[in-house]
Length: 582
Image 1 (tube, rainbow, N blue to C red):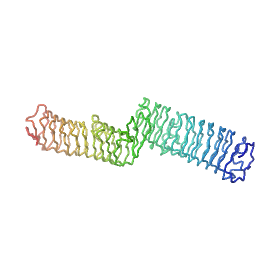
Image 2 (cartoon, rainbow, N blue to C red):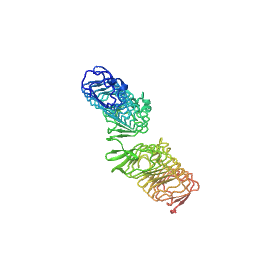
Image 3 (cartoon, one colour):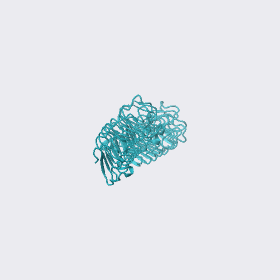
Image 4 (cartoon, rainbow, N blue to C red):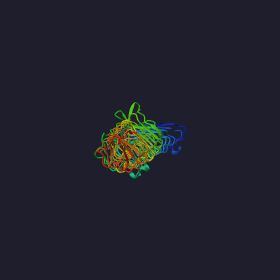
């Protein structure tokens, strides 16, 4: 311990090669002279390697620039609370420094203060701190945790470059973050008061990682970064803010954001957007999310299991994503006692190893593009509790061979064509995206109708199994299903719409049920039927219903043609009136 003195001569402690701890009243030669700590040992080379701890006594008010720089053996430095300022590079390259306290009244950390302190793992920043200068912790490769005080105003360029930080919470009082502030950091999660350098400049995420423009986000944002939370108080998100954030998994947007411009989320293929607000503000442009899934009214972060990521809404679970390496998978009915009721948009996107999926239990809704580009998927089973399947739920699933569905299309009453769940282009080509590998479709009990165009132009489907609950077959339902081999119409079917089985070139046998009332126009036009029995309950047959069929014999239960049948219902087929069902 060196007591209070006015001055220490150069080399006063030279030769103390076993010195471990040292308490000093000031740094260097005198409190009013700017000199390096090593002055009292002679020079930097003569500071003993044994010295581990330095205590600066109360009373000193400033730590000058570079005064402890390059002390390669010291592990701990104790500073008094009387210190109000620390100069540039004060502890730079103290490569063994693991412990240091910052005075409670310290307001500023000058540039490069701890640069190169490669052994420093954590440090407490005092509540009074307002400014962190440039490169303050640059190269502190073991710095794993940092807690910013609530009053912090600025973070300088390169401030945390190449540190080991994995999670950072930047408080809402911060007004600016310098370029490269978190360059070369392997961050996984970050909380920000705004996106970019400030609320009015460089408003793109990559800026704080080093990017000079939004187009360079992809080159600078760490691939480890998965979770970004914007803190309350932020009011806008600019176009390009998250451009090219290809690895980002979730973004949480506060209710305070009232403006979103342009396309801030272009090329964010894995992003899920969580909004604290219950509804979308009017100031968010159309298609602001660029097709990425959005959840409003979110109160907590995404949770996860071994295979799934999920959110809890009103004591119900929505699956928002899945691990990409799952193969055969049956979705559980619940997680920790909470029922799984829906699968979110794009939840299983790009699960390219997934071969089969069973969706049953409590699930009621499947989001749009939920299984997009699951290229290995061959079998799909959807349970009866599902009431809605989003557009393109199976877009790009080109290997699906069998499907079990509670209805055809979006719901039991809307968009009742199978192309809807494969992502159709337009009304004319509504089924053109259906998997060419799809051979067998089974509709489960409870469905009461097959809608218009349900399977039209599905030229590879061979078998469609209908439940006994079906009451009607819509117009063009199986039009041009040229490979359809077999069809058993349920006993309660009352009507078959126009063109329903037109050009089903492989459907040689079809039994019309007793109780059938109506057969639409051109229903069996250009079919390979050889015989058909029409029950006497049929009160209407449309024009050309049995036209362009070679060698067909029609057996009719009625004795004569009802007046309500179209005059052109039959072409030149053989008719047997008053027949009984074979």
